[in-house]
Image (cartoon, rainbow, N blue to C red; front, side, top):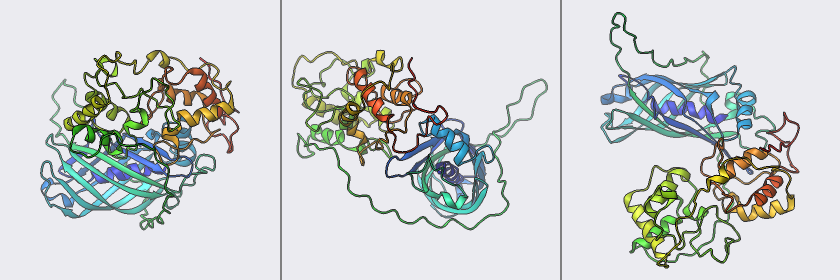
Length: 466
């Protein structure tokens, strides 16, 4: 959806540069969107964009350009929802692109771009999506990197109604009417083509950038009404074992519980997946939840971590941060502090060997007869296994029983091929047995309170045994 519109605006931010610049081949950046709802937020992303603009980094306020996002490439993590988005919401067969035309950059400060320095400006132009073109204005940040890349970033809101986008009743019944979009797009100078030599193959032309198709530019969309503040949500309860911040182990414990340990937009913490208490008496903790991964208690003296991918617990934490916390890797000081904390809660001199962290045998096939379990047991088990993250206000969205495909749930839980997962960690059979998962899947796919979305073409839930 609307997020796609946001994607185009992301390109808008990139517009802030010109000699002739083009969207970088790879990595080119991303456009992400979120539609808030009382039941289940929808998050999506695309990295398929094209664009060119003319700008002089020494006076970048005069930049102009055109940028486009291929709306057919937007992904939300659920195949059927993506199809509904393309067919019913964005109508991509008629309107395949979101297109941003950048006319000017004002309030550009500083006036000239310097390597390693972030500059800001107000971008104005027009944005076209779903057959509607409106004037737009938004703040952007631009940074000139040492490798001749120019990176633009920003965020904005896109009201659906102002672009004649009607929310499908089934798909967006519970969601808001505005998409919040964030972006980061990289640009590189356009290469000057060399004269073609006889009998020598020339380089293929640059990716063609679609031009606006709507002549009339409507006034800017009115700003959406401020959202009502959410009620305070319950957080995971814990106590700090080490007080103050003078010692590395105390700083490491703060990182263990802080979503800021991850990247922008991250809500996950180490504590959502790992306990810091002894699990030898059982994996059900005092807070009533079971973690997806093994406890960090007594883990500091293992000979290896992450099945041998990391030699220290600090390096392992950096892998987790990149895999599940939207990060680019921890700083060396953070790795050292987290390692000091894990060492401090590892009293035994002869700990067990490295855990089979990913037990790949449980990540090979889908669950047999995934909907043949017990609904009542599944609800109770979901409270134990899932609510560390899926309780309202924590990390993941609140479950909506009846709106999911059985195989989709299994893929996400076991992290099978095609899981299209982002932050959710894998649940292996050592932590979540197949019998318990079957009950949970049965609960999540039974007795829908709303019309089923993903299986509407099949006429009901699919067992998907393999």
